[in-house]
Amino acid sequence: MQTYMKRSASGDFRWTLAMFPTEAQAQDADMSLSEYEDFVYGACFADKADPVAEWRKISATQQRLVDWLVGKEKVVVKGPHIDMNLSIAGRTFINSDGTHNMPSGEIFTGPVEESVNGWVNFTYPAIVSGREVDGVKLRFEDGKIVDAQASKNEEFLITTLDTDAGARYLGEFAVGTNMGIQQFTKSILFDEKIGGTIHMAMGNGYPETGSKNKSAIHWDMICDMRDGGKIWVDDELFYDSGKFVI
Image (cartoon, rainbow, N blue to C red; front, side):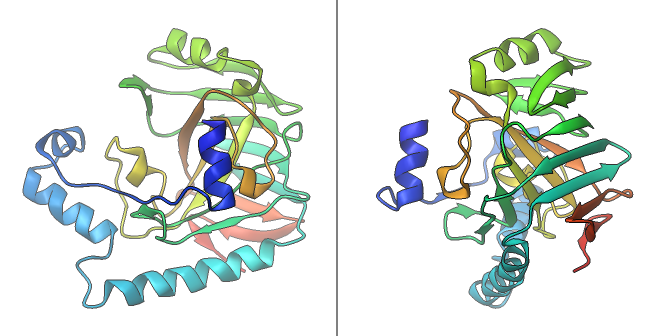
């Protein structure tokens, strides 16, 4: 995984990833195949008259946010499902705007590894390797997950977090921005982009963000912010109930 991420960050490894709608994926999303097809095309803005123009608008909007975040240091996240603070000092936010993942729609960074403190109750199941872990609750102290609970498959959660030393630290902190995705489908390619959510990945970080965390895992988990969640950056309100306010 580290070799893959290093080569991707340097540009030596060029890639893109997209989804072709199938019956199995539609079933996971609790949709008919035709409904799921419409969902996929809408998430990619392929249903618009000029999809490329749509992605260029998203890119410009996200770049403004990324530019604003340059040089910022302190992030505080509070809401019904989260009370957390972390540092982004010296770290870079990446504009994920459809050049790699399709669909895309997020901005992400790697927080300073030992800076994360607080708790989060993830509002959607965390799915990896075909296993679904529900009701994940994590508590961080000085960057490390010191308490992990789940209402379903808790043993699998804890075992995975004990994979190696880096698995209990955050490798990614991100905000989903794709307003064409508003429902959970059990596919992380779509779900982490849900407009109005944030997600965090336990484990390996992306080198291009400045993350130094190393692990054999990179496990994304999603928290809904649309019901009153707020993000402050250097004491300035940045995000409120699923929308950017700067």
